[in-house]
Length: 289
Image 1 (tube, rainbow, N blue to C red):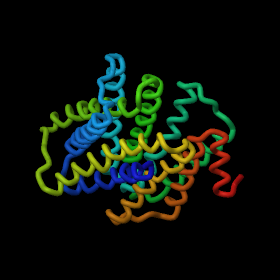
Image 2: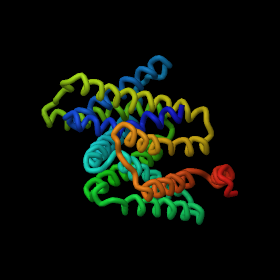
Image 3: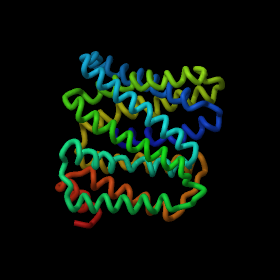
Image 4: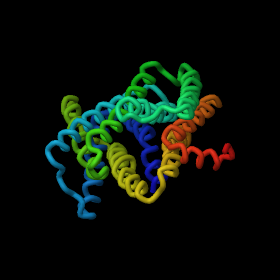
């Protein structure tokens, strides 16, 4: 389930590129993405008998998180227009590093020597990736996608700090509605355009169902059935699948240093997201412990 969720989320950049080529505006694509995604999640909650409205305070927190998610999504897909899907996915997946940095400040998590080493490993990977081809990595794209990664970290930490006692599935359902509403305002400002061609309709359906609703449902179901260590390792499949779809579907190419940098980033991110005992498990599996 976690791997299937990572695969679905890994389609986002490719669908974004295809939508751009088809002339589908970002606000239209994203508005219907979150509208359809919210419908899928609420449908599953209804079938499970878990569809309830949260209390007013929590709804306000979910709305704030939804606005953050809307802004970072717009930044991500705007940045995507400047870079390849593969590089966008790799740069965005640095967000767990920002999550950890914020957690140290906001949630009083411990900063240990091994974690500093993991951060250094990931930073070296970023340097390699960003130092690749100046034609592939544009400054505006890099800034926008990096800002999106920081925004996702704020969303992640904010969700844990504000609503720690709320079901993640139910919180996500509320956040998706708020995100759709926030992006809907931008969609209306740009004329409220609708998908016009069969291809545009398929892309809107794909990003809403395959890239959002179904992966989120599978992710939470999978997290209930797998250890945190395994989940953190499996989660690295998302940028890998982003690169895979970029190469196979869009015909993108990768430099060797991009591949090496991506591996360093994923290694650092995996170690940052695990505890000491979990890091020992990960290292033992690759013969380093």
